[in-house]
Amino acid sequence: MSTSVLVINCGSSSIKYALVSDLRENRIYGIAENLNSADARIKGITFGGQPLELSIPYADHSQALETILNRLSHYKPQAIGHRVVHGGSLTKAELLTPEIIEKIREATPLAPLHNPAHLIGIEATLKLFPELPQVAVFDTAFHQTMPEHAYRYALPKFLYTEHNVRRYGFHGTSHAYVTDRASELAGDFRKGGWLCAHLGNGSSTCAVWNGESIDTSMGLTPLEGIVMGTRSGDVDPSLHSFLASNLGWDIEKIDNMLNKESGLLGLSNLSNDMRTLVEASQAGNEDATLAIEVFSYRLAKSLAALSCGLPTINGLAFTGGIGENSAYIREKTLAYLPHFSFKLDKALNNNLARGSEGRIDQGEGPQIWVIPTDEEGRIAQETRAVVDA
Ligand code: ADP
Image 1 (cartoon, rainbow, N blue to C red):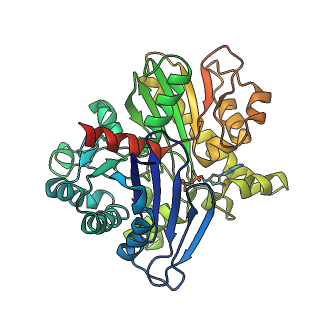
Image 2 (image 1 turned 60 degrees about the vertical axis):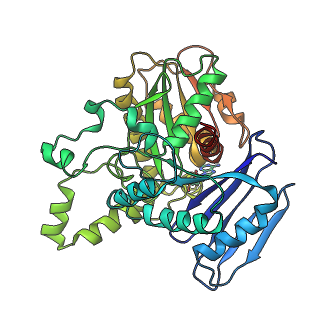
């Protein structure tokens, strides 16, 4: 583990970390959660795979990072890679300098929930490890190759030119890793067209041509696009004025409803967790069944729409907690894509073991792959590339 990158993903009340070696063998990883509360703790896996649980009552981001970094310092990470959700117009991973930190700050109105937390993590690690090179890897950067006709909204031009209102896209490190890996396994690295469905609590689709993102389902914020755990995805933009005029809701209430009370949770009135919904549906819960149907149909519709940007399609890759683990959702989604000649091999689909990658089509038509995502691995790889450049 002597040449390794520490990957840090700072959220508002949690910090995920992973020490990734260049050989990609055993990883040390974990999460500091419930920060700033009596319940603050670090849960993780040590080198060698032993579980770790450490209480750090009332620790803030800085204290939690110090504990994490001290525990890992004898592995001597070469660099730190920070996941940053919104990079604004930044097109690639960047070494953290005062100018880049300022650009991350400037992108805060576009990711008000994420970028401030990332900045806390960045500032704390820069103070604790001033001698280590630190790199920001942006969720948005992979999508900066989208053509203008894909990233512009049909809105007055000044909103784009003066206020940066455009589609950015997210989950870039995951879509990049998964489509690179699928094309590598298919024997045609970064060649041709791939569709990718990242299905976790947040979900998005992406179309990739010759290794570059050419369209994606998320937009200005991660709310646009397909149905997610608690996020609505696309709705009629007039919903805001409808709710304001008829129910007297203000922007904050509407925003909260669309981000936290909608999606699978809103439709099912039960849970944002796909496992719970599949079980409930099998037990006869009609709202859970409908939530699954809307999720799968809207996902298929998004993949069909994104295919417009691809001259040809080599294949489709599923990833994220749902994409990797739910044969049921994969089958349902493909059933809503009858015109694409996808030929699912049901046995391969059902037998794909959890956490493994594999091809699940019948060997004709576009390929269908399940690829466990590796955002930490990709962030470490991009961090190394920046540091070595
Ligand atoms: P995050 O976006 O927070 O990283 P994950 O990628 O871990 O989330 O995905 C979480 C989702 O994956 C949850 O909806 C969970 O129910 C779903 N999931 C995990 N395993 C299964 C499974 N076997 N069947 C269906 N859904 C699953």
